[in-house]
Amino acid sequence: MEIQYELTEEDYIHFNLSHIRRSKIGKRMLFLQRIIGPVIILSGGALTFATLFQDTSWWLFGVYGVISLIWFLYYPKYFERHIRKQTKRMIQERSNEGMIGPHTMDLDEDGLRDKNAFGETKVSWSGIKDVVEEADYVYLYNSSVSAYILPKRGQDVEEVRQWLPTR
Image (cartoon, rainbow, N blue to C red):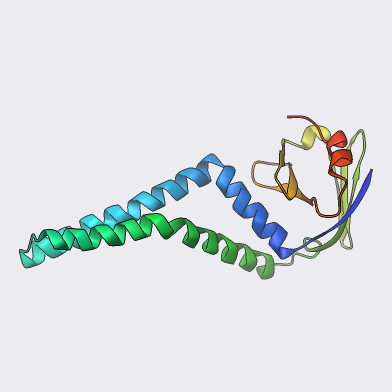
């Protein structure tokens, strides 16, 4: 089966965000950063202010508590913006010809072959470690951190599923 598609910068950004949301390390990192910020704000800010100025007014802890709550609630949005920005930088930073643009993926009994204007890669099905399907994408992981990105737009998804290994 031959599939023709175009990968965009947004496809790579979506893959990175999706991967971080699913990975144990990514989830743990986000959770810790959501918790550590408020702890630092409360202990570093409120306790330091109270110690330095000998003022233990409860309103002070209330103000720092509200700041901590805002951090906790809005940090995931900041984290997503940060991942988007870093992914764009990585794509633009190096010689990444062939990542973005038209691709042709051939699926057969032996595996997959991904071709673009700059080259071709071939992977046997045993080299595909995981297959993750989302609403708009299928990710064919060839390692724990990289995958072939297959956008569903314009594809016969049922036919593609027939060729994919079950995990």
